[in-house]
Image (cartoon, rainbow, N blue to C red; front, side, top):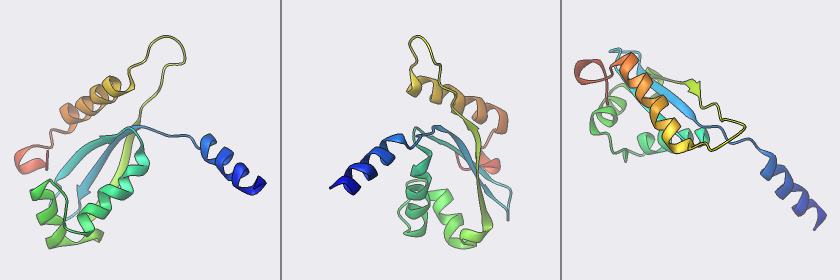
Length: 113
C-alpha cells in the first residue's frame, strides 16, 4: 500500500509543460505548427499519424507517403507561467501558437496549417 501511495506522490510531482511544437517534413520543407497544454500529448499526435487517423488530411497524406523518418518534431517554445496574479494558460498558449504561426507562415505551399 505504501508503494502505491509513493507512486501517486511521484506522479503528482511530475511537471506538466505546455508549449508550441513544429513538425517539419524534411522531404519538402512543409511545417505544421501546433500546441498542447501538456506536451506529453505529442505521443498521441504521433500515434494518430501512425494509425492513419489524424484530422489534418494533408499532413496525414504526406506522412503516409514519406513515412515517420521524413519528419522532425521539435518543441520551439515552452509556455512560461506567471508566478503571481491571474494567468489564463489557455489564452496565453493560443497567443504563443499565433506568434509561431505568424513567424513561420505554415500555410499553402509552405505548410499544413
